Image (cartoon, rainbow, N blue to C red; front, side, top):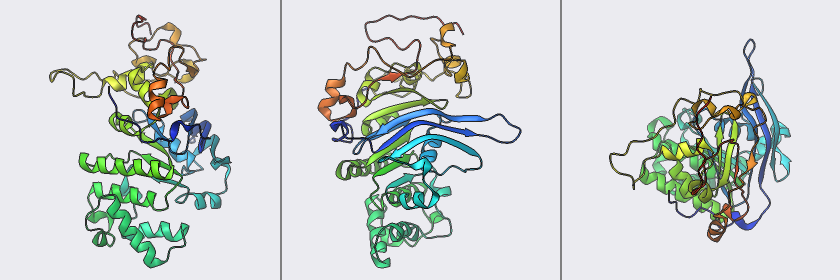
Length: 368
């Protein structure tokens, strides 16, 4: 699958990570029920000027990871452990007051569902100016002008009229763009975008993606992009982290991952995407089963029940994320593009029987 150049020219510069997530774990516990391990030992780095894609099916733990990093999970229901270091400060250990100061200014998030994220009884313009008044010295008039500029920048027509309207008066795509405008208001250093283009048509989607690219390139913003759209990943991301059942199963630079996916789950996601160069009558190849068909990681590979190459040795408890011994062939090419594959990101996988490299035969029969 071919892919355009990544968004950032700074990702391969070797800069220190802006955000370092280490061994992040989130357990939801309710009285009388078994604990649910929604995120299980997730680690990743995001550097200034880099876009890291967090990819996986619904229920893989992507959104819970982002909510845990930003301190937005309910404390009574969720047990969060690990570290989320922003410039060396652990976001998970900060008091609520310090988190409130950082969120909106240094760290911003575009939520997946704008209708439930926007206040339905407050005009959208006031919801944008609220962020500006809290985190910048802008006056009321200056904040209102800035709100108009932001709405125009995300492609909303007649922004001076729209700032006075309520969320229910806007279309779903417009509400999503308002969410993006709120997130961009203070030019955050870290932007977490959870499915930012889901409700947009292809024209507006391209405009929003270009806007996000500009933010990353011009201001050196680090961005975590949560999406199921691998086309967006191909056009915007420098590095890709693939999650399944709460754990990272593969991590690589964008070009390396698309050219040589090694985990069977990653290969299945790519095979399920329609291709323009495929015959018109070629059937799609979905991954069999559902995300609920999993083993506990303590019993082996969680993907084994859905994997066409699963064998008896997949059922081992010490399945670790390890470097791909055959990976990195395209690192030099990606380095020329300035992407993360030029050395900042290696190729790692959590798989006993990975997809063989071209020219290698690794046939395995299903045995579990």
